[in-house]
Length: 135
Ligand code: CO
Image (cartoon, rainbow, N blue to C red; front, side):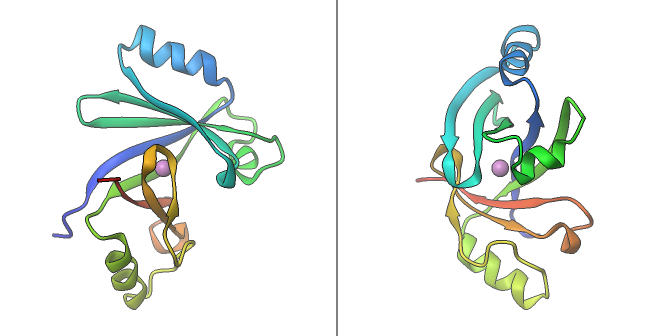
């Protein structure tokens, strides 16, 4: 086994405030973080229950790739993020396995995490993020 656990599942939403209200009000989750990640062109809101996090993403611009990905849908699942212990080592291992990497070098994500995306062509069509939490 690779030792990965699911860190978060991310969903692009058209109406961030309504979706936060849905999750924290109706569904009873707690808001864990809310921040602008400028270099990814998104606002990210972490919604938590127990150890599980759903990350709501709002594109900062309507012509960004993530906005185009959502298209006409009100919400669309965007990626699954796995928590790993050593993101640099995992990227090297996966690259050696022939996995196509979107990020050859890890970068800063939301919530202090260090992240890297794997290309969905190498992960069965699912955009996949590796995520190393801040210590
Ligand atoms: Co993510």
